[in-house]
Image (tube, rainbow, N blue to C red; front, side, top):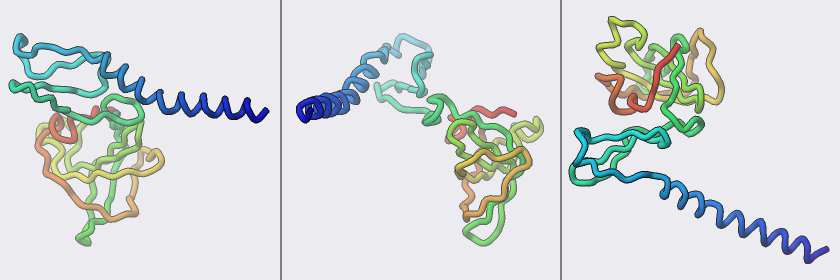
Length: 167
């Protein structure tokens, strides 16, 4: 009986140690390489990749955004009403609250993505935060102190490039 448990433990240990290496090798083998000099663009997206990867003219590889750790794709930011933050400087920041339906990260922006008159201005000043539950559609008052970032002038660049906004 002791020999059986020892053998089982050794087998599980071997599988646990070798699995991450095999997974990493598989992932590296599945990424296609391309000669981007023959294309008219510097960035190429693949349906099987979860990260937007770009290659510049010098062959340097860069990541354009970090995907949601839960879905493996862009953060799906759902409108959640109004977000109110107490700032480390002592003031408050109130704005439009969006929350990722996968990892629950939140962003509160000065301008509203869904207001066509404000969308062209970009997010403006914003606060990134995270809470361990889904926020209801009426918004949320954040208990922790926060720092305002920005202003961001585009919904398509910087941290916002990894977000897809929806209602």
